[in-house]
Image 1 (spheres, rainbow, N blue to C red):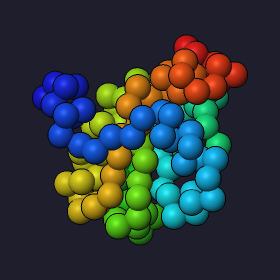
Image 2: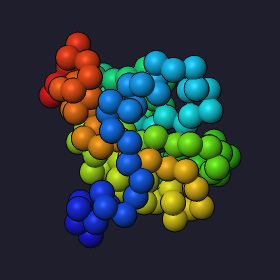
Image 3: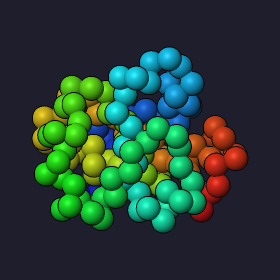
Length: 120
């Protein structure tokens, strides 16, 4: 399936909306997932995001039902938004009811919100 399919078939949140949510008091109920590689997270990351590398899916996918609440709002981040869209699609197939892909990923966050976040 194409990246366009993933982007058009799942709910999204913009990086500006994400920044607003991260600054607000309402992050307690958010599940924040970053599906990039640990080496990417070492270059640039956002506080509060839990790293679940998509390349290690086989190792952590079985733990999802016990680690995450399928009804909590879940925001998923990657570099540009493609891997996170794949993760969102999978979470939705597992019964998650409130999943959103961060459009443009951390790259867009660096460009549009916080230039102190390194671009790579």
